[in-house]
Every structure is written in structure tokens, then in C-alpha cells.
Length: 202
Image 1 (cartoon, rainbow, N blue to C red):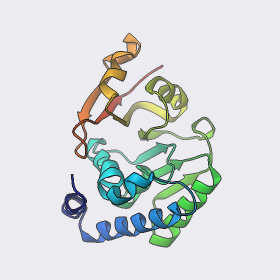
Image 2 (cartoon, rainbow, N blue to C red; image 1 turned 120 degrees about the vertical axis):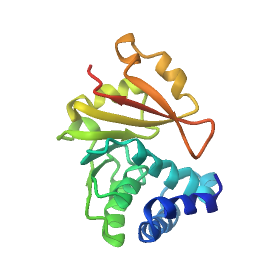
Image 3 (cartoon, rainbow, N blue to C red; image 1 turned 45 degrees about the horizontal axis):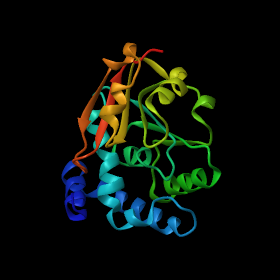
Image 4 (cartoon, rainbow, N blue to C red; image 1 turned 30 degrees about the horizontal axis):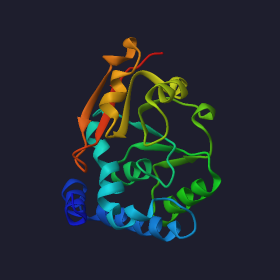
């Protein structure tokens, strides 16, 4: 997916006002990247496809009746801030690093994202229950399951972008979990997958 394709996908999927707000977020990420390492130098030129659409595509895998979304290890806001900008869901960004949370707070105020909450904490210190839990490049699937047990209810869906190793990671899970997980193809990278599971119990 080219950058032009990615922008066009966002405009077709969410409309021009949301795409413009996503572009404002993109600009803030690049500006802040000069002060703290939010994204890799190699991905700065492909931020629309590598980060924005890669995040936004997760929305299509969320339950139609979802109302709350917790993003674990949000970093610079991928995928959580993108989800909040593009939807009316109540999104909680869970990020323990102070400089990252300061940046996320400033983004929400500067571009107007009223449905986002920034929590400066590790997952274990957060309370509440989420309809959707996402995590991008945070931990292994078993560790993510363990650290979010208290945040899940019986119908919580986990949506986990896992790159090229998602399928093989599922194969290594304990038998009691293996059938709960399945993979969907990423639209931004033919070699990457999204791992999805409903109602995972420990």
C-alpha cells in the first residue's frame, strides 16, 4: 500500500474531516519525533500506511456493539489514538512512560479528541473492563493474556497486530487457548497478520 493509497483508504472509509484530523496527528507525531523516538526513521516517510492505516484497519475487526477500547502500551498513539480519532468509542491509552503520555495528552487537546483517556500506568494498574483490547508490539500473546485478565469480560475481543509471526505464535499457545485465536490478513502488508480472540479465559 502506497502513501497515496493509504490516504485514499482513510478518506473513503472515514470521510474528509476524520482524514484531516488523522493528518494533523501525523504531523504532530513527526514533530515530536525530533524530541523523542516515537517511530523509526525508516517509517517516517510511510507513516500513513505503516502506522495510521495499520492502526485504523483494526476497527473493522471490532464487535459492532463495542463501546470501550483499551490500547495496551500505546506509545505514540498507535493504534489507540487513531482508533479514538476515527470512531466514537471510548478509548483508553495505557502507557507507562511519562514523555509519551505527555505527548498523548497534548495531541488530544490540540486536535480535539474528547473520547480518549490517557492512563500513565502499566496494564496491571489499570481498572475497568473493555469490549476490545489491542496491543501493538508490546509482549507475547500469553503475557498479554496474563496482564489483561482483570480488564476483560466474557465477550472481550483481543485484537493484536502481530507482524509476520502471528500464525506461528498461535501454534505455540497452550491447547486451552489455541482454538480461541484466529488470524486475519493485514491490508497494509501481505506478510503481516492480525491475531483475534474472543472471550479468552485464563
